[in-house]
Image 1 (cartoon, rainbow, N blue to C red):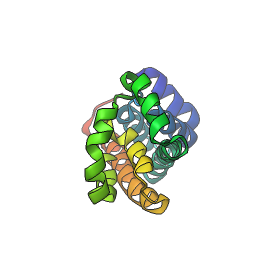
Image 2 (image 1 turned 180 degrees about the horizontal axis):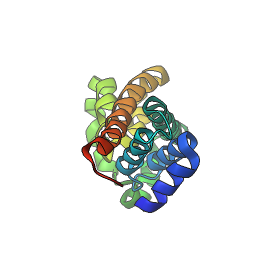
Image 3 (image 1 turned 135 degrees about the vertical axis):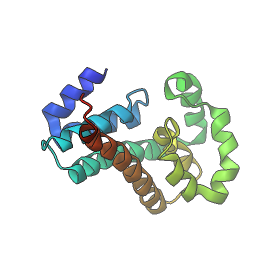
Image 4 (image 1 turned 45 degrees about the horizontal axis):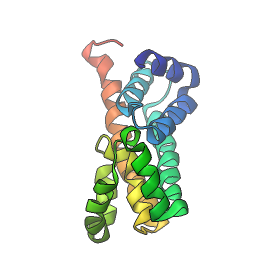
Length: 169
């Protein structure tokens, strides 16, 4: 999969990074760690800028984040419960996890969204409880963008600095 990601970043540059991060957010087994690190290496070689890479990764991931948020609102709790039960293996999330988070989410929703954006697995799917539990779109977008940008920046910066350590991909 890494070779496929490398080719997409080299071919699509910023658009490739954004589309891969959208895919990663919608289908969690695609690794953002590889996407953004490869994009950071590409930026260090002068193909893209580091800031542009971070912005593209953040934009693509935020589109996917918003999609999950919107689906959670659109389908509602009953239909999302059926969907998550059916596809929990692929989503790496089950309904019991959503129920456990409800109380915490009511109390600390924005902070949970921000922190979860920087944690593998949770980062892709925290949008579902945000939509189901009624977080306002404005708060969702602000805290999601901050967390997503932090995650994208950390990974892209790591790839960017990778070259300076004498390592190659």
